[in-house]
Length: 207
Image (cartoon, rainbow, N blue to C red):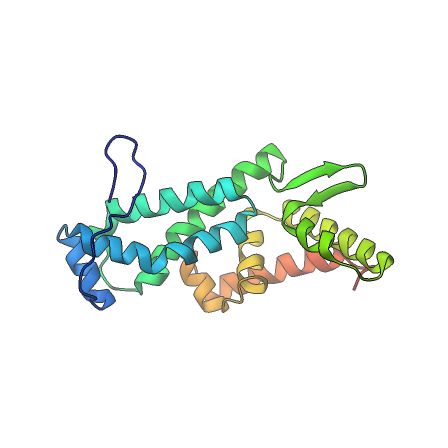
């Protein structure tokens, strides 16, 4: 439920009989907070995972998680079942992520990249690299490739980056990506093509 003092989304410990998703949505639309909490529980981990994978920042992902479910809470009455709830929810999440990426691009900073003596290093990859005991030269090339990819992603438009990551890192189909971004499958395909061309041009000596 929503804490009126600080606007933070919290879940009550109340248990209730399981209902199918459509019934949960209709009950939540009528003001049933327990039904709404069950909807949140059904999607909270996937929403947080998607935001974290797209933004590469736990802090930004947490902000998107909170704001996404606040928007669902405020706008659930407008959901008309003309698309799946999953698509509607993820459209909210991806739009919030796009806003963060646009702001980040303006600031020209990548919040998960830290400067080291050896150059930029992505904290997400650092744990894996620290545990690697393979060929040092291979590890160096892998690190350089990862840094190059992050640099290219940072130069893409926010929409190009979103489509590229949803397709290649999340494994979503272009039709689903188009629905999530409120556009057509063809538009998503064209956006992915532009992003892929830029990536290939920048990584020419690696591929």
